[in-house]
Structure formats: structure tokens, C-alpha cells
Length: 271
Image 1 (cartoon, one colour):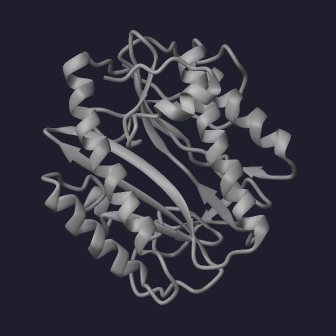
Image 2 (tube, rainbow, N blue to C red):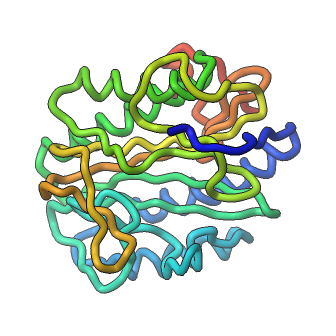
């Protein structure tokens, strides 16, 4: 847990470039949110994302990554992460998590959202809400805490307080910057005060994955798609976040996270 190797820290100019990549991701995900509807295929969404990333002058960091064939991950219902876009047609009542990344001038951004397809059961909407809010509690802890374990503990505590949910154990958040995946790992559960220190210049992809049942997953025959072992539905939310000298900057949020950070009483560290 927490990974090994040197943690990459960035200066002001480097974080500004990551912000450019983050805005590409934010705007692409917003377009995808608007495009999700019954009858749309996950392959349609992928093609749309490819064009949106290209027209913003960026490139995908997913396409070709260890052989991955999409520019987004499309994980539907019991699929937790890494769903491969293709012929699957979205149906009324589905829940789709969309993970997207982009590169600008060699610097990476990475984020994920969960989107209801048409009218969705209330418990599924609540699952998504809990997951998204736990993400923000982790982001807040990046600004107020001192270690990666403080982020992990904040996510776990919030989810546990909301009811009987499973926090996926097999996947974590991660460092990000000159590559999409860097040290350290950022688990979604753990003890406060543990793990690497959070210093100005550290940039992390924080990404809770929460289910209506088990914390365990298995990988399908495509060698990518992770599904829950009990068939329970899942939600995945993610942001790329920088800790700066003045606070926290959510690089993949259109407003930099300013509004939500103010609500949580955390200093905004963006430009």
C-alpha cells in the first residue's frame, strides 16, 4: 500500500500545464454527461470523446495504454472500472461511470464521473452521490491533512457513515504528472497519519470506487473490465488535485473546485 518510488513534485508553471490538461478532461466529461442517453452505445461515447480531446489540442493518455483500445473507460452497472467502449447499448435505468484522461505538453489529467441513464432507481442515485461526496472529503483532507493516509481515512469515514456500502479494495488513486500513474498509491480506506507526506507541489488522482455490496472485484476475459464479485452496482468518481502553497486546486474541475472547497472550509489554492 502507498506504492514505492520518489513522489514527483511540481512547480507553479508545471501545475499550470496540468491545469490545461485537467480542463480538457473536465470539458470532455461534461460533453459526455450531456451525450449519455438510452440507445447510445459506449463506442459512440468513445468516438465523441476522441473528437472532443483532439479539438482541444490534447491527446488521450488512455488510448494504447498497455494495449487499451479506447480514449475513455465506460463501466456500466456492476462494472467498477476499466470497461472497454464498444457495441454495448445504454438502457434506461443504467448507471455508467466514465473515466477520461488527456495530455497537454507532456502533462497528464485524469478524472471520472458517474452518470444516470434516463430515470434511475433512487438507491443508484444515492450510491453515486455518496461516492462523489466521499471524493470531495478526500480532496478536503489533501488540503487540511498531512499524509496520504489522511485522504484515505476521510473517504472511508464518510462512506461508512452513509450506510452499508462496499469500498473497492483492489484499485486505488495514484500520483500523476509526467505520467498518468506515478507513486504514491492513494487507497480509499486506511488510518490517518500514515503514508507519504502531503507537501506543496504534490499532485494526486483521488478516485473512490464504491458499491452497493462487496468490496471485491474480478477481471473479465477481456483482461480489463473489473466487475463486482456479487453483481452489485458500482460508482466511480475521480479528480486530479494539486496541493499548492496556498491550498488545494482541483485541476479537473471547471472552477478549480473553488465552490465545493469553500463549502467544506478548505483554502482554494488555484490561480
